[in-house]
Length: 213
Image: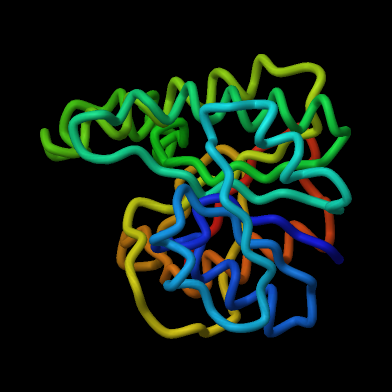
């Protein structure tokens, strides 16, 4: 499969590139500028693509089989992820390419019958995470309203950090996954496994999913 990964040098994107290469896929790594090219691994096809320019994105997506967007906004500019995602969706619609959007956990309902989502529960999120969660909720609402592009929205659990690649996790849809101790987490390595799994299986077309241990 020919995959293009946007945000290919980021925490999640770089691991998606590694996972896809290990499975024998042909990976195009899209980065913002020339300086980022040096951080790409061997075996990828590099391309510089301005995610704010749909025409540039269309050119990058042409001849690909699928796109994965792991784009993120810097601190203090969290809301920019919505415009970036809109550009990705527009280009995906114009090229007819299926796209997996790496999103956030804000939309997920809390388990055990809680009426709250991760974002709406006043006690769940620390204050410094709230801007990111609000942006990811707006990103999700944008995807949910999209009718022309073939999108998939991937939500991580509450805690996403570097760790081992176990290759074993659970998959859900709209509820935060927690383990027997009440922890909601997955390694970035296993989140990348889940994203490439979805790229191959297409189980959640025009739908959202989540994963967790």
